[in-house]
Amino acid sequence: MKITVVGTGYVGLVSGACLADVGNDVLCLDVDAGKIRILEEGGIPIHEPGLLEIVRRNVAAGRLSFTTDIERAVAHGAVQFIAVGTPPDEDGSADLQYVLAAARNIGRYMDGYRVIVDKSTVPVGTGDKVKAAIAEELSKRSADLPFSVVSNPEFLKEGAAVEDFMRPDRIVVGAEDERAIESMRQLYAPFQRNHDKLVFMDVRSAELTKYAANAMLATRISFMNELANLAETLGADIELVRQGIGSDPRIGWHFLYAGCGYGGSCFPKDVKALIKTADEHGHKLKVLGAVEDANEAQKHVLIDKIVARFGDDLSGRRFALWGLAFKPNTDDMREAPSRVIIAELFRRGATVAAYDPVAMDETRRIFGDEARLSYVDRPMKALEEADALVIVTEWKEFRSPDFDRIRGLLRQPVLFDGRNMYDPAVMRESGLEYHGIGRR
Ligand SMILES: NC(=O)c1ccc[n+]([C@@H]2O[C@H](COP(=O)([O-])OP(=O)(O)OC[C@H]3O[C@@H](n4cnc5c(N)ncnc54)[C@H](O)[C@@H]3O)[C@@H](O)[C@H]2O)c1
Ligand SMILES: O=c1ccn([C@@H]2O[C@H](COP(=O)(O)OP(=O)(O)O[C@H]3O[C@H](CO)[C@@H](O)[C@H](O)[C@H]3O)[C@@H](O)[C@H]2O)c(=O)[nH]1
Image (cartoon, rainbow, N blue to C red; front, side, top):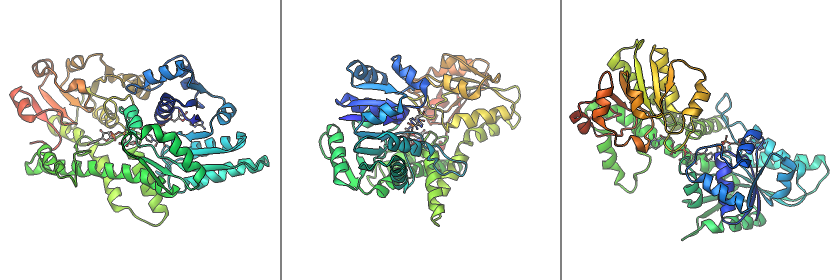
């Protein structure tokens, strides 16, 4: 099948590469000429495990190419995926300007039937707006061409995006005409494996399903974070509580890890956008409002612990920071808790020596030329002359460090663990003063 993917970010590039890998002829469009140049030169603009190999393989096979030429992109694909950003507007609602610009371009240049598939996360009712934008462009040039608008929200996780796309738990498709439904069946047939993973529904339900999934997951995290904070006061251990409840199949094991707050390009923005959508329709989502508040507070929990230990004035103090990305296996810094923690340490006069396996370039881009923030190329180097170690992202390489070396290198053997990576008993035996989240 000939496919165009509009937007070559995390979702667009992964979708385009994986669709090419099963034999489709895919053209990826982006307005960012810098990204397209990197791709044309054989690189990829993001860090995502396994992606570079798939991109290279499919470019070499002639199934995957890249362009900034909108007209060519619209002419290419019978199916046009929209995978552009939907960042939060100032009031928390999703900014649809990129989605609607992409839709208009399709209406402006299409020369025959097109299935327009919205993969971006968009508020309920966006399908109608996309349809109206395309229809308006067609009428401007007096073209009476058929098209279908489909909602196909994406559920991939950064850091595991290729695996998630290739082996999805389910594929949600909101489509309301047979021709579009048939295209989607064909397109996703190679990803079905043992059972039918396609869940067909109307467009509005599909749009809401995406927000429901992210809001539910964010709720679990905020719930566990609140319980973790309570556990500390009560002298209980949230890790044991997690094991105690996760074994109940009605609750399940996933997304019950307490920590220093959820970040990333999705949960914070999608929770806000759903609250906003509800507000606009006269509904107050009380649970979700609390989920968001709890998460904002949770991003400060490590700072509260640091202040309780070292005092509010941290001038002259230096902190080693392990992990900058919002989660492991990505260089994405969007809404990363590390950003709040670094800013709060600066505000109190401290300096920071940071290490992250892949997100240091992105951090440099965000913090610019900041003398109070230095970067090191090995985790242990960050500890030299530092008053304490603060862990913000649970990268695999931090799982089993040499604790004796940590103790020896730090000015004081104090460890703040924002991702509960270690056993408090082992820490005690290693002579480290350990501050986890909700641990005994
Ligand atoms: N990142 C994720 O893990 C993830 C997962 C599921 C869903 N989503 C959703 O998917 C959407 C895209 O997210 P992302 O993280 O891939 O975004 P991103 O910012 O990484 O990429 C978006 C790309 O779209 C390009 N773009 C903007 N306007 C364009 C236009 N008119 N024509 C062509 N290209 C254009 C931008 O230059 C950018 O490269 C969002 O709605 C997001 O909520 C993201
Ligand atoms: O038990 C947990 C699980 C996650 N997190 C945090 O939650 C955030 C989000 O993690 P994750 O969901 O793994 O990453 P994303 O790539 O943001 O993926 C989410 O957002 C995507 C964009 O909408 C969806 O497609 C995915 O299904 C959804 O998991 C990160 O800061 C994690 O540290 C926790 O604090 N505790």
